[in-house]
Every structure is written in C-alpha cells, then in structure tokens.
Amino acid sequence: MDLKNSIELVLFDLGGVLVDLLESPIPVEHLHNQDKSVFAKWFVSEPAQLFEKGMINALEFASAMQKDLELDLSTDQIINYFEQFSVGLFNGVDNLLHELGGHYRLAVLTNTNEIHWSQIVNEFKVLERFEKVFASHSLKMAKPDIKIYQYVLKETNLQPNQILFLDDKFENVQSAQELGIHSVQVRGLQQVRQVLESLKLLNI
Image 1 (cartoon, one colour):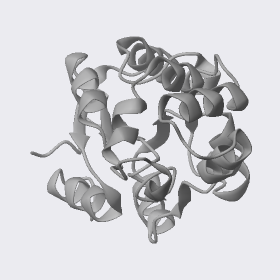
Image 2 (cartoon, rainbow, N blue to C red):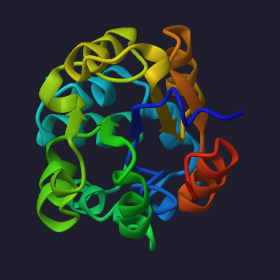
Image 3 (cartoon, rainbow, N blue to C red):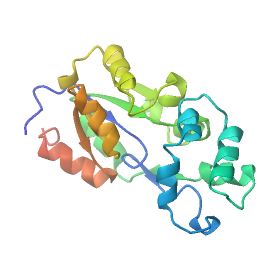
Image 4 (cartoon, helix red, strand yellow):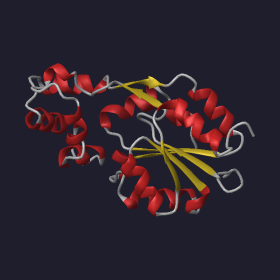
C-alpha cells in the first residue's frame, strides 16, 4: 500500500511503540501466582481506566491495585515501581522522527497518567518532538473510546484518511479504524520502521 500522497500526519502511541517498557509494571514475585498476564487484565479495570483519564490520583490508583491484586507492597512502593515501568525512548527514535518530520506532521496519542507524565515531559522530552501531544489524563478520556479519536481529528483539522496511527494494542487500532483512520498495530521501533517503509512513508 502506498499512502504517501494521502497521509498528512503520523500519530504515535508512546508505551511499547516509541518508549520501551519493562515486562511488567510490578515485579512478578510480588504476585501470588507470579503471572504477569494479570496486569493486562487489571489495566482494563475501572480504577486503572479512571487513573488514565485523570479522575483519580496516584495514591487512589496504587491503593486499588494493592487491594485488587493482593500485593505485598505499600502504596508508596507500588508508585515507585510504576515510575520505573517506562525505561526510555527506543534507540533510533530521534533519527526516525527527523526523517519523517520533513515530510509529515507528527503527533502523539497516549494513554498516560500523572505518574508517567512528568517523566514523559521532563526526561523523555516528548513535547519537543511533536506538533501535538494528546494525553488521556489531561483530556479526561482514553483509548479505545471513539471520542478521543474524534477529538484528535477536530484538533488537527484533518480527515481520517489523512492520518496514520501506530499503537501496540489491538483494541486501540480497531477503534481508530472504525472512524476510517489508517491504523496499524506495532510493537517497538523496528516494527514501526517496517510499517512505515512498507507504506512508502520512509526513504522518500
């Protein structure tokens, strides 16, 4: 597929796409069954979703996780582990964005929270790399809710077929596709590059 004549903006997720993550937000030895898959299930729970929408604070989030997963950790320890979950930008992100930036508008659409936001801004310096950053906790809405994609379309003043969206979660990609946004599930920078090259958006 050749999208280079229709795409105006490349919209990135952060965690798992441009930002490397640890295997789990809490070391599995703190879980009774040591099964890290429980985190993926828990992060669709009401407290986790409220936290990503900025509707509860870090302490409330940690208390809910502590109770629901029966963690042998204090809330402060849980917050500390959660702060370490994001490792940093994948090697090569700056080069990739530089390559794209001369040809396309660049933006971020991320489900994030108050714990990770300061790290994203101050340590990873994400705001410097993109025209717009759409962060769930400040918008009070989150992926895969269709409303957040509609908001992106309004704020960028683009049609769905003018955006390429890259995200590591199938449900987020599927939701964007329902609006007609070109969306691809990717994991890590190597897959991002492969997709961009296959769509002829790189090496222009």
